Figure 1 (tube, one colour):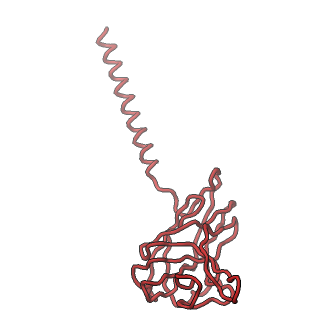
Figure 2 (figure 1 turned 180 degrees about the horizontal axis):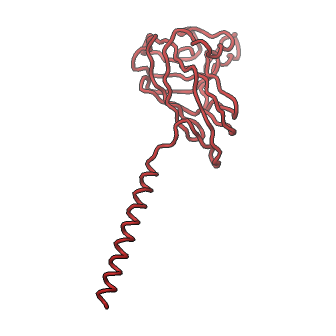
Figure 3 (figure 1 turned 180 degrees about the vertical axis):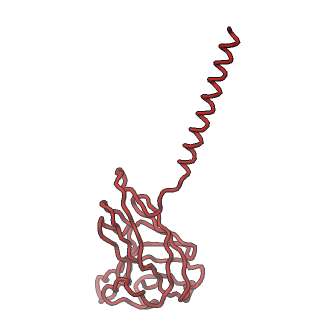
Length: 196
């Protein structure tokens, strides 16, 4: 009778171990599944924010020691606001978010870094010459017309989105128009980096 109890106990323990192993493996598999790249969640909320990018392009930059500039339209079709907070790429050491604004005097335009670029719910953010843009600082090679590269965008809600960027000398058809008078690359500015 004791042997029967021992066999039953061992059988139950082995079955419990097998079930725990299967459940544990499933949990690890779920934990390793990457999130959808174009979906962001607002901090403290379960509301999804759907983001997409159109007309991503970078201005030709023939000199490695100068910075490049990148532009695009980011659409937010979700019900909650989000913001672009950073980016990375293999073609430059640093990606910074900037805005072109009028200088205090002299009628010149100047760039200033920004912490984030708002992407309102049900609307869009336009990164364009003369406005918000990405600076590609520390180019590893010249940006040559007709080539392309990828940039990974990071959003406040936690999403990351990797998009192809086309190198061009002019904006692609359908992209937003420049704000004010956009200056060409290499124009004089009261900043060390190239003109957006």
